[in-house]
Image (cartoon, rainbow, N blue to C red; front, side, top):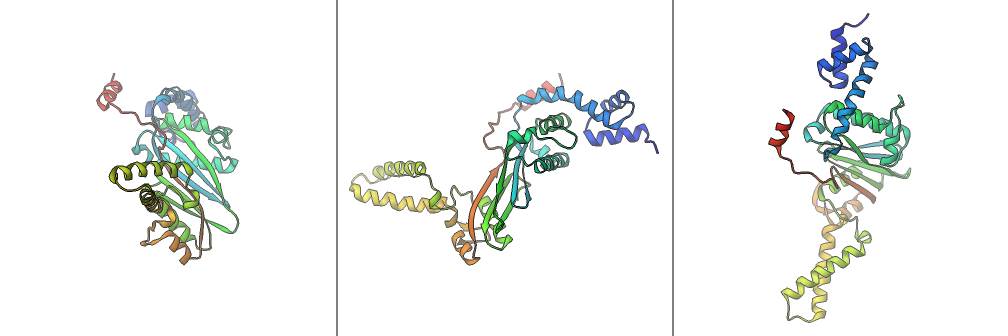
Length: 294
């Protein structure tokens, strides 16, 4: 049964988010062919999308997709938190994830050039969605984390994906791996343990602690100051290293103790936060509104 114009309009609006008048023009231009109408709207919308390229998209969500021994992590950004909570945004993120998994990409550059079943690149998908949603959309921080067959992933997404953590453990309890991911999310450790602490960090902390100690204790001998510095440094190391921090399900138990209790070893973790590295511009809301009504 042939669909009525009203049905086609409704379907086209749901698919693209475009206005009624634009959808009607698209259907007229494509002789009521829904696929051609979508293409027409995309082509017309791209000019608008390009104008949004200078905007800052620092909101958004991370997604983590696990397939076998690989965990795909990727971030899609938008301009406002309102859009990030929109179902269309989440559906689009899922569509992109399918393409990234299917093509096996491991970095952002390759991800943007990856093509879906229609032969459309992810970069084009992003540009098209920018036109549909009305905000600048970007894809970044695409990476793949791999584990061995005898290891487990732990995945935790906070606030829908504002923070996404992936852990890899040697062990048999998936819940332990997830609890560790939740702990990493909450505690934001700088390092897993002392073995990962950089010489640069140690040198910087020693310099700061030395200056503070000498100012606070001008009459103490250098060897006493040195012992004080090492004592304070060891205390700081326990604060920045995950293994010494309290596990989220029992803050009185350290991660090291939790791992021992559950016969598990933490191999590594990846903590990802939306918008890191993107400089947010200060906006004049009144000015923006006035520009919209010109």
